[in-house]
Each structure stands twice: as C-alpha cells, then as structure tokens.
Length: 103
View 1 (tube, rainbow, N blue to C red):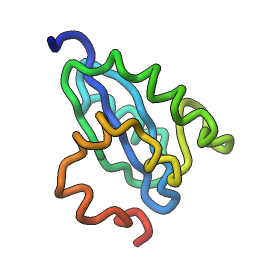
View 2 (view 1 turned 135 degrees about the vertical axis):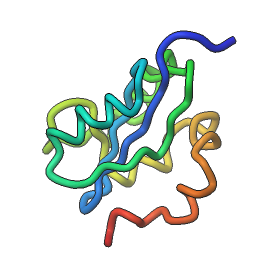
View 3 (view 1 turned 120 degrees about the vertical axis):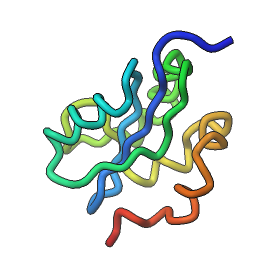
View 4 (view 1 turned 180 degrees about the vertical axis):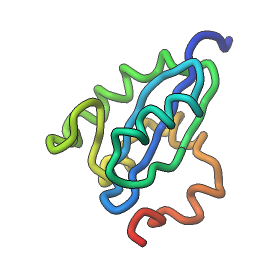
C-alpha cells in the first residue's frame, strides 16, 4: 500500500555524492537542495509513497556518509549498497549513463 511521503535520490555532478530523502514534492525539494549545491543535481530515483524507507536506507549506507557535506549525503561508491528493492526502482535511462556526473 502506498501513501505518505515520496522517496528520492539526488546525485551531484562533479563529485557523484548522492542524497537520499523524502518529500511531498520532489521537484520543489530538488530546487531547494540545488540552491545550496555547488554543482548540478540529477534525480536518480523518485518513488511515490515510499518515503518510509528513508531511515532503513540511511542505516544501510552509514559507512558511506559524506563527511564533507552537511546533511544526509553519501559518497558515490555507496550507490552499489542501496538495498536491492530500491536500486531496482532506478529507471533504466538513469542506469544507462551511471557516470554522467564525471563529465
């Protein structure tokens, strides 16, 4: 059953760092986070109604926490450790260009 906040994963160009969060409006949230970001952000995942999964994902990625960024950011190498049930929801179009942020 779906309901509640949406789950999102944003990734930052240049560094590859990514943010996992929840929101009721992913486009507005992207704009808010982009305002404080030194580099372009891209939505890797928007999963409506699955915001309740955020805490478990943060726990799974704890060792990849990005110390140089304020907030809930993780280092790029942590992407492979996102729980499979979430990783499998990332659109094929995003997975086809996994190193977009390097350019």
